[in-house]
Length: 291
Image 1 (cartoon, helix red, strand yellow):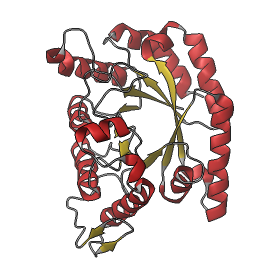
Image 2 (tube, helix red, strand yellow):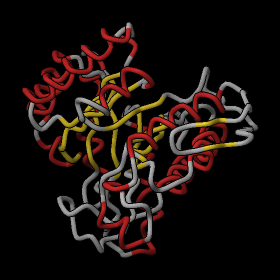
Image 3 (cartoon, helix red, strand yellow):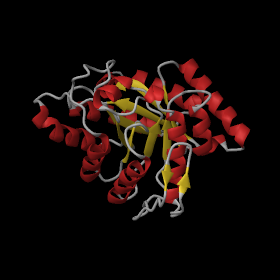
Image 4 (cartoon, one colour):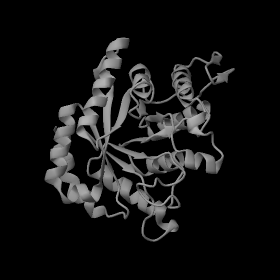
C-alpha cells in the first residue's frame, strides 16, 4: 500500500518568508521516510474546514515544480485541479512540463471544481453554472489526444482546439496517470471508469467509502473496464502529527482501508513543519507499505 502526503496549508511559523524553506523541509522529510507521493490542493483561498480563507495559499503547479526540484522519487500532483481554473491546453502543458522536469513523476489530478467563493472573488468561471462536467470530459479527451501526439482539430462540447500540438511529450508512458477526484455517483465516478487511471475519495466514513467503491465498480462493469486498472486513493483526513502520535490507530485504519480496496492512503501536513513527526511515523509508513 502506498502512502501520500497532501500539503494543504502554508501557515508555518516564521511568516511568509519562511514558506519556501518549510515546504522544502517537509517534502524532503516525507520522501526520506518512504512517502510515495506529495500532493497540493489547487485552490487560491484556504478551505474553511482547514483554516481561515485568508491564510496563505500557493499556486499549485509552481509549488509542485519547486517540490520536484528538491526531491528525487516521490510522485507529484494536485488533489485536485478544478477545470474552471485553466484552459485545457495550458493545464496539460503544465502537467507535461512537471512530468518532463521531474523525470516522469507527475499525475494529472483533476475534478469538476466546486469552490464558488474563490471563483467569484477572483473572476474565474462559476463552477456551479459553467457546465463543469462537460468541461471536465472535454479536458480529459484533450489530454489523451495531446498525449498521443495527435494534433488534429479537437471539437468538444465546450472547447474547440484547431491544432492541439504538444512538445515535448511526457516522460511517463503512456502518459501521466489521470487521477479524477470526487465521489459523485452519476457523473464523476462514471468519468473515472471511462478515463481515469486513479480515483480519489474521502475516508471519513468507511461505509460511505465502501459504497463509493462499489458504485465505481458498477460503472466499470457497465463499460467493460477492469476495475483493477484503477488506482484507488483516499484522503484519510488525518494530519501527520496526529498519525505519528498514535501509530497503532494509524496502522489499524490503513488495514481497514486496504481491506476495502484502497491502495494509496494520503495524510495531511501539520500546521507547523514538525519534522520529528515524520521520523516518528517512519516505522508505520513501512508497515503500511507491507499491507
